[in-house]
Amino acid sequence: MEVLTKNAIQILEDRYLMKNNEGVVTETADALFKRVAEYICGCEKKDSAKWSKAFYKVMSELKFLPNSPTLMNAGCDHAQLSACFVLPVEDSLESIFTTLKNAALIHQSGGGTGFNFSAVRPKGDLINSSKGQSSGPVSFMKIYDAATEYVKQGGKRRGANMGILNVDHPDIEEFIMSKSDKKSIENFNLSVGISNAFMKAVEDDSGWQLINPHTQKIARIISAKSLWELMVQEAWKTGDPGLIFIDAINDSNTTPDLGRIQATNPCGEVPLFDNESCNLGSVNLSRITIFKNGKYEIDWHELSRIIHIGIRFLDNVITLNHYPLPEIKISTLHSRRIGLGLMGWAELLILLNIPYASKKALLLAEKLMKFFQRESYDASEKLALERGTFPSWKLSTFGTSNRKMRNATCNSIAPTGTISVIANTSYSIEPLFALAYRRVGILEGKIQTEINAVFIKKMKMLNLWNSPIKKIVLESGNLNGCNNIPRKIKDIFTTGLDIPWKYHLLHQKAFQKYTDNAVSKTINLPEQTSLRDISDIYKTAYKYGLKGITVYRYGSRVGQVLQKCNVT
Ligand code: CDP
Image (cartoon, rainbow, N blue to C red; front, top):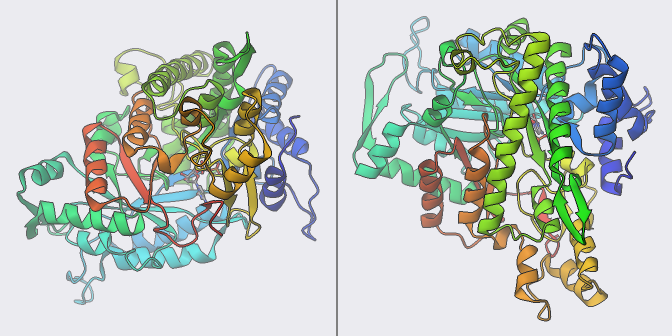
């Protein structure tokens, strides 16, 4: 069992370890990994002990971790193990409130929910039965938001939601502005569902038709460019709305016979059909290296081994999961979607002496993810031969090309917001936010200052670690003020806000190229970023064929989780 950091232990004690009725922790971290491993090998017909041991080993060595609900709930009664759900919202009170109830049940079990509200008739539309007026999708989102506030996930964290409205809905401007006061709808990420046709209208500076989903009639024609500018302005101000590119999502849908996908989970890494769920897991790249001839290298053999174990683990989760609703069970078992991703990318680059903002990093990102996808598909194919293909395989893109697969999708790049803290590595594919930082909120008000451990290790290897440098890093969070460190070395340690946005996007593009689900990435921007920059970022994301885009300008939200260490 690897030694855990103080922050990891604190998070585990607060949220993951079993407690008795008095709230006293009754489990160690080691016992947690054993509990999870034992439960997840429960569907292994042969060699169950071998798999239990393998699952325990990859988790306790912090080389692979499943998403939080699996760590929290595996082995408990009626354990719900998935992080991601999409629920249907139809144009009726019955559907809206049934889904609200189901979302509450999912939040209670530790999952997050995504919804596309575009079928709901606009504000002011006629309601046939009462002859009254409809209050529109945004008002219902507010009700969902209020409910989320009061249902804590598994009693451990507040629920997360994704609210989507398509760009041709008559209430789109109200939706775009709905978080403008920086205090409404806090439990939702917002995304506008963007079509190729809309992007062309923006390019051509033409009129854009808003269509009433209830009557299918044109409600209004507005300027596409003005609508675009409104999205840009709000994203600059608050970080919302992001965009999801619905056509790009459906172009790579592996099961097009099941229909068009309209929504994603809360952080955007899994496009799902209504009533589908997905479970995630992440490989910790910072632990998949070998030290040879005085240098770190990627251990490709070990990476392949961990990916094969990870895919098997996640496929077992689908079989063993207790689904919150029968319809979710049916849809999920039909496609058996999983999302194996990664964390610790920035730390891996530091170990390899590669600056994040470099062509070398982008080339490695593509090479690595291509390998990651190929190994994941091989693992899923092996499982298909052993256990059978996913039920809707025949009409899927895999079926038509006659490649046997156990899972309709294999890879997602999740934010790894908590599991990377447990594994003590950098988030997902994000650059280091700062070399020293305080995590606020994540530990319920207990603020911890951390200097990145891989940074210290590397500086020591370079014989550059001393107390004046430590002082500068603690004060500023970066090496910019250290005049005696060569540029070449500083570049290896460049942090999030000093990385040009183009490189953030290029990393997202490089990883998306070989990710069948999607990549959750936040384009972290300095406070002085302009409206024009946001517009360029959103347009470039579309041009790159990304499935979604989220920006965050430093300081634009109250209570952000990571703060540079000089900000309290
Ligand atoms: O690190 P952890 O497994 O806790 O989660 P993550 O990688 O940060 O987020 C993965 C997914 O978990 C998100 O996209 C959401 O679907 C869900 N999630 C949630 O429901 N509630 C949260 N507070 C955080 C994440």
